Image (cartoon, rainbow, N blue to C red; front, side, top):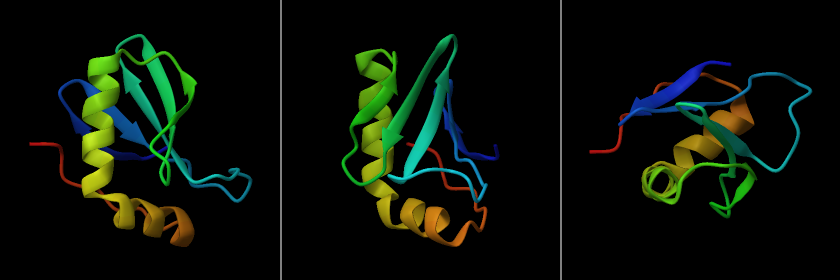
Length: 84
């Protein structure tokens, strides 16, 4: 699972497999915490990310929503800049 971005201890990944399921989503790892977040709704579908970490991920996702959806749809890996 390639790393799309990393910042403040958060690692953002996305599967690149034909078998990956909808809705479009990212995987987030933050220490021992994990989360799966829907790209379109920004809702955590699964996981236990702390609220502060989830807020940072959502802020980052808002900035890169179109790019994330493009990566999901084309399956073309691209690194995205971190949250500043």
